[in-house]
Length: 409
Image (spheres, rainbow, N blue to C red):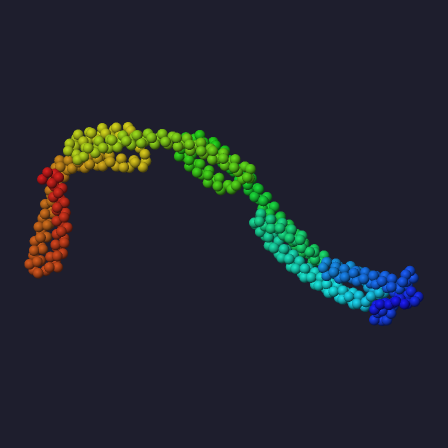
């Protein structure tokens, strides 16, 4: 008979293993020595040790499911319980018991983790739905559309919930996207209609602009082009494929007209510049007649100068008032000389002037006497009042005397 700490072989070749519940028959060995029998069943024990170690490592380091882990444990436990090996089978049973506890703990952790993930997924999808419903009312068509497509990608990356919850949230999400698409489609349909109306309006404006491009009615046509530009801006934008071409035709027609007008105005400005030089020369010639010494000769000379003036034509608008003002000043000087001559040679006017001067002189003399009397009487207030009145009468007398001098005495 042969034995070791965990088993023995009796004289009949029966192999036993020692357990906490006593010896158990492992098997029968007839092919060799008892030592070989124990060695064989000890190797089977070592095989179980290796398999349990491998399973412990898989449970600890991989995502082996609890179901598969329990199936493997049950398979190994069956081999341990059938005690067809020699070794510390009780220790193996305890390791399997502990492994069961580990698997159950991992199962609960995964269950809790899955619950957390589901809860997080629910909140994430609810947030996506809320944002999608808000975007459904947006008029930022491109930005909102891009964002909604991004939300779909985000949704696809989230775990599914229970069917009822997932379907309800997806229905709201999908409805929000559909509502936005419907509004966007209606908006662009309306925009297309507006752009078509703008195209028709601008084609009419282009036709009129082109019809006016050869006009020589400079003022009225330029004014009409300004009105057409205002109408163009008010018409809105046509479709992109038409807008640039219409604008180029519209601007091209205006450019033809304004280029022609600029050419004509340039010629006119040059001509008017020459006219200005001629009129400035005539104004200088007229100014030599002042002061007037020979009224008859000055009048004849100014008339001749004015006839040449009228024959010259227009000058630039910004220089007109200055050069015409010089001629008007000479004309006024001649008119004033004529009026002075008339007063000097008019007997009735001379008599009226002499009479007025005499009346004013009498009034001045009378006031002076009244002032002297008031001073003598000590009535200074009255004297001062009369003195102020005398100042006014004296000023009138001086003016009348000056006028009388113009009549020669």
